[in-house]
Amino acid sequence: MTRREFLDQVLAPLGRLTAEEREAVLRELEEHLEDRMEPMLERGWEAARAEERCLEAMGNPAEIGREMARQYRGKGWLWLGRAAVVLTAVVCIQALLGIGLLSNAWDSLAVRISPPTTIAADKLKNVEATEDLDIRAEVGNDVLRIYRVSVGEKEGRRTAMVLACMYDRLPFGIVAGDLNARSRLFNQRGEATGNGSGGTGSYGAACVARWTSVEPGDTYVVWECRAIGETIRLEVPLPGGEGTL
Amino acid sequence: MKKTKTLSRKRRALRRVLIAAAALFLVNRIFVVGLLFPIQAVRHNEELMGTGRTEVVRRDWDPSFHWDFVAYLTKSENIVMLSGARLTLYGWMSGFGRVVDCTEESPIHGGTWFLNWGARSVIYVFGRVDDPDITELNVQWTIAGDADSDMWIASKTGEWIEEDGRRYFLCSYTNANAADYRLPQVVGRDKEGNEIARVKLEQGASSSYN
Image 1 (cartoon, rainbow over the protein chains, first blue to last red):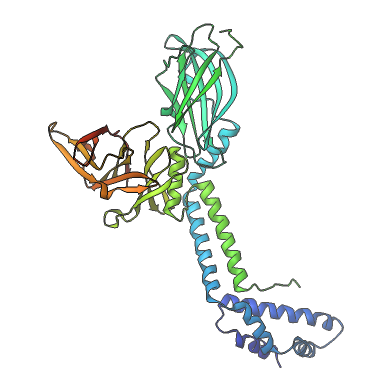
Image 2: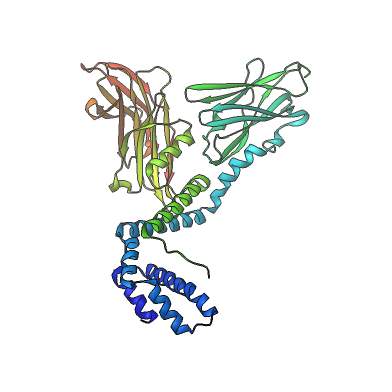
């Protein structure tokens, strides 16, 4: 029996194979045959004789075909595999089209490591003191983090400016929007005199600046963040130590 | 020689499904796109609006108006949210929405949401009725340009949705010019038709799509 006849007899009971499956079966059988022939050829056997002996040793081709047919039963698996390939392709195309959306993921990570300190930097003049902070609170699924407080002058008044950011508890998660509108900054007398704020935001993170007037001797300001069913109040110490301003 | 082992159809399919699932997960998480089902967009809306997990009360899909948009009325103990899911090239995406805070005691909690697609628009009025004596609701608007002209849209108990002992309502009317509809109010009446509650609805949330 020649190699061709052997392979044809193996493939006969395999029914309707896809071109890819047929190719894979042939490749496996060919490799198996070559593996068996290799030591025989090294020992000086003639190629045609070695092939014939190996084909005999491999057994009944029809039996091998029936054995292999078991692996290729079920159209359902075939279609499931094809659907998965299509889904993967679609998802990859969506990822390529949405490459710009990576900025959301970047924001979500960057704000945890190094939140932006240039927000509304031009609003405060004659800055007396600045201090980096790390005050955190959970607001729903998100984390509110107060990371910088500065004291300087704004519109002729001594003013404290606080920078805060918000991000989802899970990296790359979506943060609740509208941090700007939900946040207020009060001084020790409960006054929220700052009526403006600057900020940046994306699906990944939101950063805002709020300010309020402070008096000499003030030691803290209060950041208030409203959420559904709760209001978070965080005391933010002013820079320069206790009661020194 | 390097041996190759052919995989069975089942193993090959399972391997491909695994790769697809991993790709989908990564794209969902990192790009925030590639959502397969509209309810996943609602989960994004929850995150965007900071509501926490909500349950679907009603799904409103009107293919004759916009086949690629589904509105979802969802609820939790503290809120009622009306939000949308849009089918785009990126899969289902958040269509934004409107949240009504129900933490303060009130006989009726309600809100409005305007949606705009070029010349087409829809106005939704939705909310929750907490007063058991209210059996009928009327939504009232003042039409722009005529201060005395009120427009009444009736929503009776039969059209309400009852979930866990609470009653929710959702009315929509299409191709209404949002700019003309002002000062929305919801009036609750008892069985005899007496007015027992009147609540002004916050107006302002609107979303525009191309």
